Image (cartoon, rainbow, N blue to C red; front, side):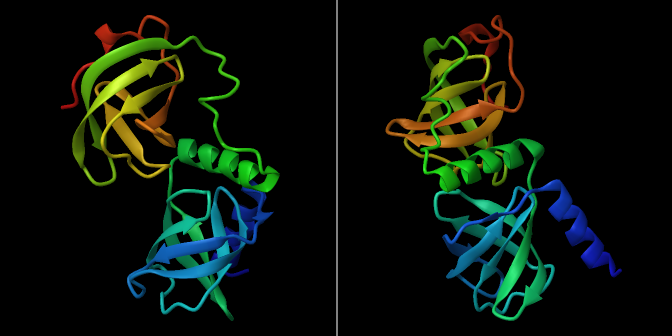
Length: 203
C-alpha cells in the first residue's frame, strides 16, 4: 500500500469523520480566498468539494462555518475537491471535536458559559496577550479566572482555536464575548494559582 494511503487509513482510524455540508472559506498559496463545500471533517482533517489550483503539500487556512480557524496542508486531490490534514496541538484537536459535536447537534458551543464545574474568581487585572502563531501582542484585562479557564477583556479578539499566552496563563481561545474573548487553559491550574498574585506580565 502506498505511504500516503497508509497515512490516510491510520488517520481515519484515530479520528472519526463526520459528514457536515458546511461552507468552507479557505486560503492557499494559489487562492487569495475562495470557498468550498465540506464533505466530511474530523479532528485530523477535512475533505471538501472545491475548484483550487493548490498542490499537494501546500499550506491551507480554512474557516468552515461555525468551526473556527483551522490550519493544515493539502494531502490529496481528487476530482472536484481536496483533502486537508490539520496541523494543531492535541488541545486544539479536542476543542475542534467539541465544535464538530456542537455543529452536528445544533447545541451552541458555550462551555465556559454553561455547566461550569469550577469556582471563578473575579479579577480586573491589567496584562498583555501574546498570540503565539503571529507573535502579536496587545493590552488586555483578565476579567475572571478558574482552574480551567479565564475571560479576557480586550479591544481585539484572536481567532477561535488560536493559542495565546496572557502573563503566565497559557491556553486556547474557545469563544468570543462582547468584551473580548474566553480561553481554556492548556492544563488545569490549582486553586492557589487561580489568583492575581500568580499572574505575571508577558515577556
